[in-house]
Length: 82
Image 1 (cartoon, helix red, strand yellow):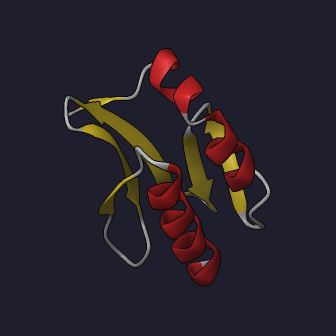
Image 2 (image 1 turned 180 degrees about the vertical axis):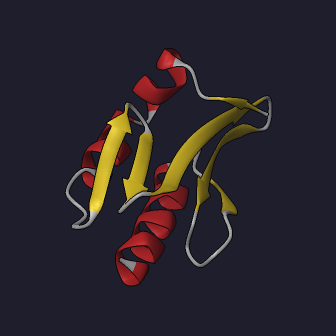
């Protein structure tokens, strides 16, 4: 899976805007967030859809974020852990 390009990130612009409001996260580059000095969130695009790698614990977990419902689930998980 390749990292998401500009077009893919535009598709989830509202979701990324919500992430920007989560305390403790800093967006280093569009769609790439850090929590402190550690990478926390980035997006991949694949023929199967868009996927986010999120460091919920010590390791990254992959979540599908192609739909608004999927994005809402991931956003809730992120808010719980941050």
